[in-house]
Image (cartoon, rainbow, N blue to C red; front, top):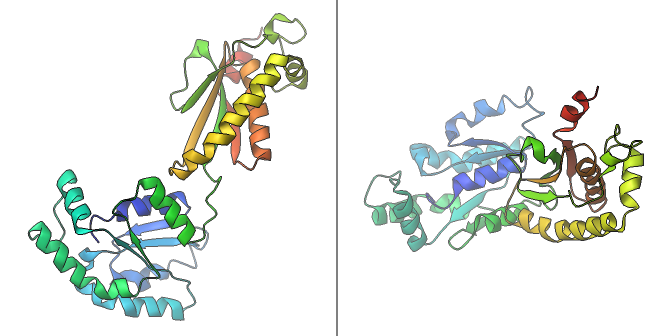
Length: 279
């Protein structure tokens, strides 16, 4: 149904790794499938958005679906539904015209009538009337048996405050309270990626306390970001220059989050800047 959330669903499918096409005329589906042999690497999972704008081609949907299955393609049909009141409110808020171009209430009634057959062919009908975006994404994941949990892109980045905050940071942790290896002659030329620097920091009770508590915080709340449908999250850890403490903590946090099953990767924004300042 127009206004039931098809655009948001296609965005969710993109996050799941699908190749998405919106409003592909059903008559062009055979031509689209000819791309499969050449594009099999990116056409493993495809999501097609189909709605009332198909017009006269809607009547060909059941035949096209049957043809796909005969050719060996695994297909699922999801039908997005919403109550009349929800649709009226959404069109009112966005000020979009209904594709049928009639008075809104009449258009909704007419659209329901035209989509009756398509709805009957659906493997699952999803009513989005009272769903948040996160709930919709979770429903899609469960419906298609996609292993979504912990697949959020998680980046732990180190940085130096003297170079400014990272613009893409979602969460920022300041670790300038930790003992600074820069004041130790044997550690000053090293970085947080070197084991002597990490050993020095981990000998400090404060470091171990910080790592334990911050890791518990992340492990507790990262699943909530995933549940709300967030695809990427950047956790920034900063010290003065971005060479020792923040680098070591970002590295240790990344390793420990990986052990807990999170798809974490590390990035050290200012490390090369600090290295370039060496005499």
